[in-house]
Image 1 (cartoon, rainbow, N blue to C red):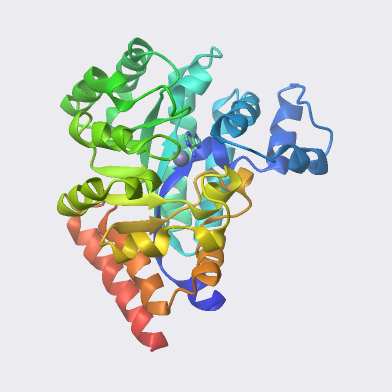
Image 2: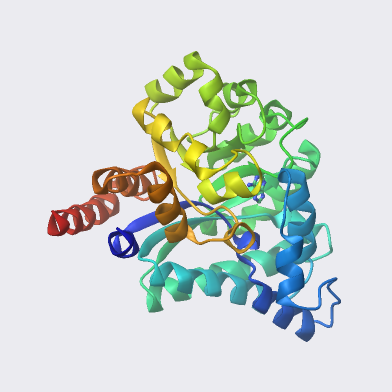
Length: 335
Ligand code: ADE
Ligand code: ZN
């Protein structure tokens, strides 16, 4: 099974670039930028990565991102993740980045987007991994702040595919960002949002009806509302599920209790993703491997999950078909 997963062609649809910051690279960049971080060793970092909820994690995640200063830092971070994609047979990835985490510290939007997008371009040429960028608004900040970010992004519009919503969910419902999502869509960005990771089903309803999202990030709490599940199925919206993130942030108790199998049985279009792999103990393949073991998923289930990852990506349909055919041939070769 492990080998089947490792070579399975797949796309990753839920990944925060700031969440790919491995301790070794963090130390290296901190040192070259002469920034102190409150950890002396990889062991100390690993000890700090014990979270009881989303906010616990976010506090450490924003602190780590604080060592990123120059375009080269953003390039190195992104290229390092894209190399891991190539190693895992991730053929396409849709990467979230949080501009406000950096602009709030006085880093220019341009520095962030140029570093990330240059790495994406180089990876497409050298590693055969394609990527899109999802600019995510931080929901703990105001809608006015999000509007500023939208404005800053416009000169770089052709480098950005979609807008997302992340950070502290409780108390920051999707409706808070109604106008900025409307404006973002008018600018040509596809809307997605984190919803129902810790927040109630009502937040998912708002993301659907008010933000009019094309894909749901997480969405676990949809299962508390059967009408919502029906509506998500009816609208054919995919959910980007992140098993190891869910256990690390105690959204689910353990993988044996993970609702992924149930979601699939209900007809929900589920994909498997890593979210913040440097913080949650595993890249996307580890997420597939661990959830397969915990829920005893079959090769056919894994094939379905990988199919969803291409089908519900934002790739144009001819490229999707190309990847889906490659995947089908791979699956057949194992039967
Ligand atoms: N930012 C990075 N990872 C996140 C997550 N899992 N939920 C909300 N915001 C995030
Ligand atoms: Zn996320």
